[in-house]
Image 1: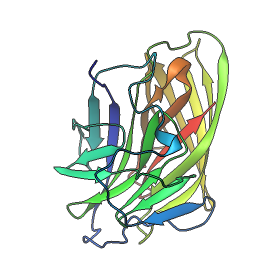
Image 2: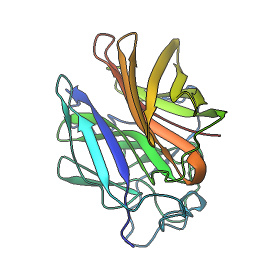
Image 3: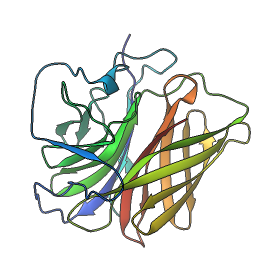
Length: 240
């Protein structure tokens, strides 16, 4: 059975200058593990136990990204733990490493590793930074009831290092609405959107959000967000 991974990537804009530490997170609200290790072995981290297409998830690979001041475009990702952006492959996890909340990879990527069915974060490629989100999309979406998702988030706001914080989302499956808050430093970013199938999108106070539900029965959600006027682009991931 072929694997289908839904992926969204939002470009944070040019100007990263190819600096190796352009996506290294500050240690504000979340722990981070640093590694410069590369490996050709399969990932044995506990966070990747679902990498072989878990039940009740899609088997189709779909992906997109939004360049700064540009429109959405489509890209591909070979698997859950590898991000492909602008022709470059970025490994998002490594064998034998406890990811915890965030993992800094080769000093050019920060990846949220606390989810089982999705990955998200910020990477640098071709002198630009990208916020990304990808995962195994839910097939058996709930159609009634509500749920609260809590998790983490990261954003680039023009500083040298990506900042990290918390996220919380309130979902009404019946009304097909999602409302959330990303709290990073002194910013409390309000997000709101409409659910369409296993995906969601919307705009609140100038912040555009897009993402999806991942894992059986929408166990997790992840996505990207951007506010061009405020100058930030980021990604989030949360679970019930």
